[in-house]
Amino acid sequence: MKKKLVVLSGAGISAESGIQTFRDANGLWENHDIMQVASPRGWEENPDLVLSFYNQRRRQLKKVQPNAAHLALKDLEKFYEVCIITQNVDDLHERAGSTSVIHLHGELLKARSCVNENEVLYWPNDLNIGDFCSQGKQLRPHIVWFGEAVPKLELAISKVTQADIIMIVGTSMQVYPAAGLVDYAAPKTPIHVIDLNPHTKPKGNIFVYPEKASLALPQLAKVLIKQA
Image (cartoon, rainbow, N blue to C red; front, side):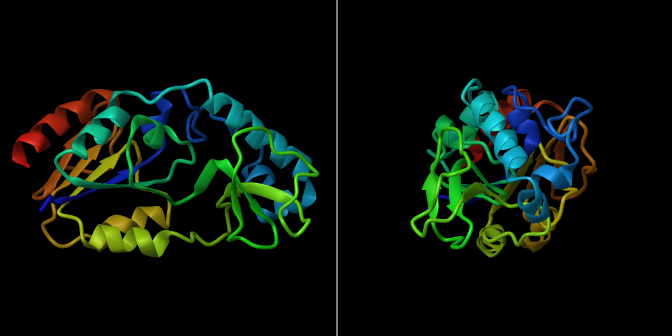
């Protein structure tokens, strides 16, 4: 039976493919107040702005490709039962070939009904005013905005509790509730942290790689494959 490898991924892994992150100085939120484009109130006050913002993100996503870190995670599926829990809303993990991906914060290439959160549609192109759900109501981006519940959090917690190995890639694990996931790991579970500017220090079962994910992850994958 394959060991369970749970990967917690964040903006850093996508940034290497060219996707801007709001935490960087030139991040995609720079010209917007976060609450204008990523909150229920912002949506109510100016849906045109919100739709335009995510349409731009969607167009940008089509211009980038998975990088070596994404591909290394796909390769690990041959030797481990891999589950990726990502804070990213892009589809780069899926495009790289990973088959088990939990999106905590929603998905950019999907839209959902404003009146039925369970009506979710694949939506790869622009989403506009007048695009309606089956009940004749406006569709919104399938993104978990600030102040909204994270619907897949319980599923993510259950995966972490069962993990034999945990990998944290491209995230500072400073944003909750995602940051609290690692606390559900069983004691002494090996935790591998890959981050260019890690907030974590190595100790005991925690191993830290202060490098780009595209460099460190393929190397770590080779080690884990030998151990499988």
